[in-house]
Length: 75
Image (tube, rainbow, N blue to C red; front, side, top):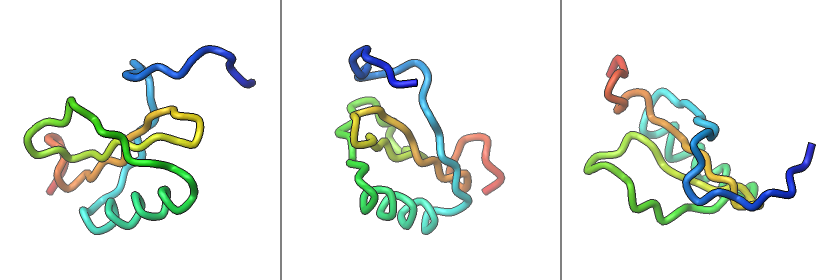
């Protein structure tokens, strides 16, 4: 179902796409940008983020998370 509500700049619920390595993260981010996603200038990044924030063509934000750098990751 389509929503007519405006896109939230910092949604409480969003999609996280998980990858296992930094190389996979970079590759997936570029693939998604090629499909129409865009990078988001996210002012809430921690000093060494394990995620990249992107937006779909409608402006809905989502993250690509590198599990090897995640705080609870096995890296």
